[in-house]
Length: 164
Image 1 (spheres, one colour):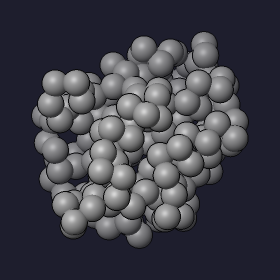
Image 2: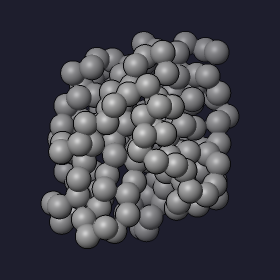
Image 3: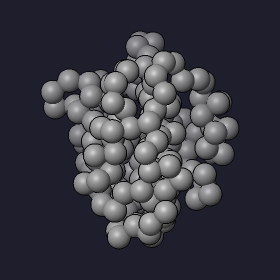
Image 4: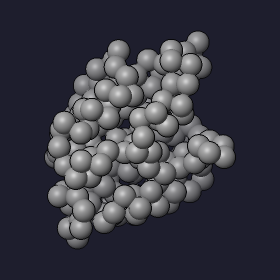
């Protein structure tokens, strides 16, 4: 495992640019149903435990199962801005789970948000449509457009302990 050039945690990517590339390569089939597996692959790549982690396809389990895998508790009733704030205040190298329950029972989604020397970004592994590609989303306004465009999604945030 190599030490990151820009993050103070051991990771498989040296820069946010490479983290963006990890988004594409950790989900090569663009399954659209496996976001819970994508977060496993993203976390493994960022932590350096598996530099070539690839998400499994298919449905990925419950919120409780995600909380168990990452040893965190997702606090609901938050906002996308809260997610960026939590990752920023947790410090360099921090990661958090961001859960999204869409309005009108339109489904749910989950992503990793991480802090690289104060630069915070959501690491998104799914390509949805042009303009909403896999990559790192640095701007909370852009993330709100993607994940909470009607302002009615329920957002949850759970900071991941550094040993997970």
